[in-house]
Image (cartoon, rainbow, N blue to C red; front, side, top):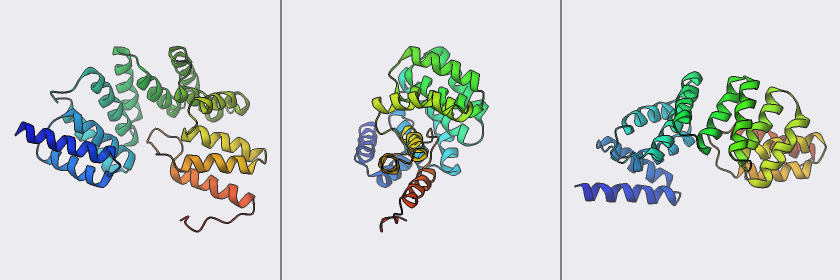
Length: 244
């Protein structure tokens, strides 16, 4: 039976990796309904649900990951991923303080890039500019070529400190390192729009719209689409026929 269960897990993971998300989702759910507790499928299932979004999915992620804590294959590395996904879910359910405390505990135990990136973003969401700035500068010392940390710093200056000039170099450096990072492209497109560089802005936001949006993006697809339409309108262009 264990051999067959492992085959089912492997099959679901292959479906997911190949982009067959609906089939993978159904297979993950069946494994869960059958009572299988394995981090090897529960963690990717939680990622799939987080990316789908919606309160029902966030609730399901929380329930799923509470059970996954007892998985026999839960390594220290997987536990860190579990805690990050759990923190994202509870944040999206309106429990920002719980999300922050979860990641703070994880970070104290084992500092790593994932917690620096996620906790750095959540500190921005708290609105505490100084705390967010101090932590993300610490993260930058940990890895000065981390595109997400650089973007976090850009957002602190842009969103919290209202200093667009100070923010821009961070976004530009982030873009050099990760050219398809959605939030970075969005903010750089805003600079282009403000300077009348509509073609450049359009190019950036089109790349952003092709990306895979995450719960840890400040920019959701609707916000990116709204900027795209505004940029087209500024150029006197109509939406392409295949646009919604």
